[in-house]
Length: 191
Image (cartoon, rainbow, N blue to C red; front, side, top):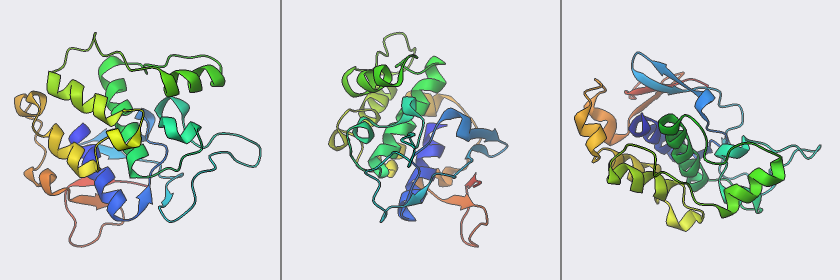
């Protein structure tokens, strides 16, 4: 699933779109694989995204899946989307977020300061390293692009050991977005 979603994130970044609120409830499984739904908070990368509060001081996004820099006045971009994808992958494997629940200020503190504990996850070292890199606290320590993350995921034992029937065109990152451009093929994203 991570490979397909990383391909979709790569496509969105190529279209200059920042996702900002990728979370498990915005991903559904379709016949062709995972589909990103609800692009309601996605926006163009040329917009200033350093203010993540609305006029009523409500946060735009889901805290458990938001990158640490977004709580410190940083801007959303492809690297914060990579963080969110890493968190979605962790959630898919663990069945929970690593930050738990609690008051918003407690979540902020844990997201900004604590490391993700993956010792209980039964995954390869390669997949563990990919999730660790994707969810690094500093954006510069993450994958440089969703395409780089996708390519790393395609080299994991998990990818090679499961025949899930997705097309080999995933390595090229081709994506279908509704309405689909005539030349696109691969993953469907609905928004």
